[in-house]
Amino acid sequence: MTEQAKLGRYEILAELGRGAMGVVYKASDPLLSRIVAIKTVNMAFDRDGIEEYAARFYQEAKAAGGLSHPNVVTIYDVGKSGDLAYMAMEFIDGVELRSYLVTGQAMALARAVSIAAQVAEGLGYAHQRGVVHRDVKPANIMVPPSGPVKITDFGIARMRSSEALTQTGTMLGSPKYMSPEQALGKRADHRADIFALGIILYEMLTGAAPFSGESVAALMYQIVNVAPAAPSMVNPAVPEMLDLIVAKMLAKALDNRYQSALDTARDLRECEATLPPVADPAPLPGPATRAALGRLDPEASIVILSQTIERSRHADAAGPAGDEAAPARGVSRNFDSFEATQRIAVLGNTVPGPVTQDAEPAVASTATLPVARARRAWGRRETVLVAASALAGLIMAAVIVLA
Image 1 (tube, rainbow, N blue to C red):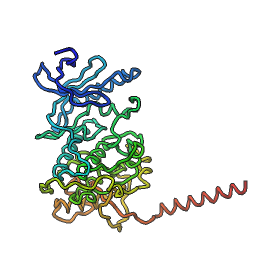
Image 2 (image 1 turned 90 degrees about the vertical axis):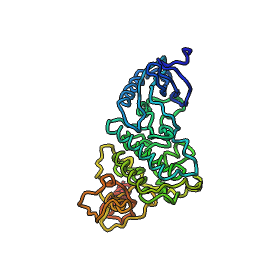
Image 3 (image 1 turned 90 degrees about the horizontal axis):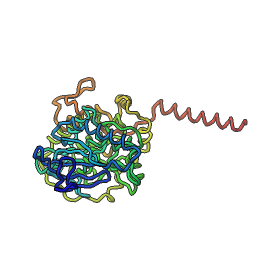
Image 4 (image 1 turned 60 degrees about the horizontal axis):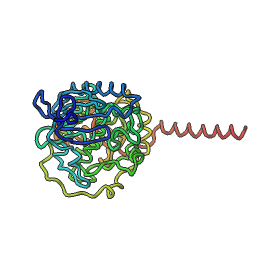
């Protein structure tokens, strides 16, 4: 074995993949007689910030190395060889989820929900330990022929979110799977991972992404402003219960989104239990045909720009008691958790009797599920704001005339 075919003590066997940050190899660990995957990161592209870069790399590798979960790839070792920093991790004999995502063709419902639930369980475990992935995408999800789905790339995900680390002409991260707060340059927390998983689940259910654009700017605009059609409008086989779960995962306002990946996983498992085994559906219409199904939410960007990570989940008051819940036909920024809990409980047959708003929900994880609501009439607050604006305009006009 030549020197070029080694990385530390590991003997390189084959190249598995290549990206902007480095290369992934299949390698042998002669000390422990096992096959591993080696992910390398090139430290030479930014000489000015290499010390800070390396420090973050090892810090995140250490955090990811402390994760031990069936749905998270295990990190065995970390090291540096020349300008290459590397991680030795569990080798998964499988393929990336993106290999299963065929444009225009949906995945079998039971399989799609099972994969999403497993990923949510792995993310929930990491989030509980203070590790946020921030780059959840199909390329970072490994699907083996048998056994659990595995999330990869925990070790460098947070490092990639740094604005200071950029290569010429290269955007770090994956714009297609960014959350609205990431698209607007705001600090992202664990709920950004939930949003990204919602996009992946949408793709698996419908055969196309909920947001698309000919440029990064166009894509970012859609993520922030456009509410995609409910999955059932694209794939009629999708049940209403799953529409609600996807809507909650893709909520643009942080307080309306799932607050925990474990809650997401529990709801997905509840939904999975109601799904009969089904064959893959026939190819669905392509993305161009479905583009008109998305609807613009003109106030979405205002909501996202004004929100903060520290904002209370109960900050948004519910609508008037007399409002009727509209069918789930898109991802709305307005949700009523209580109504959604009732609907999911009925759909999942999890609550034997009537549910009262003062009582604890029988299924805790469905307590935060969304439901799209019809837009209510103006209240006192809106009327006062409009009147105040009109009065201010009149005063300004009078000042200009008198001047």
